[in-house]
Image: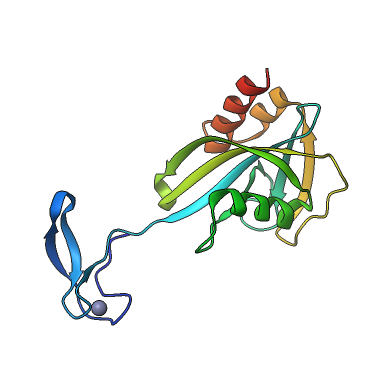
Length: 164
Ligand SMILES: [Zn+2]
């Protein structure tokens, strides 16, 4: 998203050349540029000790589809902390170890997805209100269960290579 008005004072922004960045919306009142804005999210492939993958179904949006645990990062939070928090909030499970998989820009939603492989214990699930079901899959089935060509599918395939 490109800013048109200053989020701080509401003034209309003007284009200003900022070094290598080229033209950037600029507020003359606050004397600062406003770089294009996007959300940063974490997306996790949860695996247990046997290499099985936990997928969830959300209780809103597309409720029929199994997806990965994901959520928006909060200000001042590291991506790792966000992943641990989202896993705990949505599933009640504790991430023992995280491994960065890759980051992918989700163009449709203007979100930078930071993908992790999260090692968790297969404990009792304590699902949040946003989650209607959590189910463990062997990893090959997990690949086929999520939406074809989705970012989570790409991350599960990557996780499978690591877990081999
Ligand atoms: Zn301003």
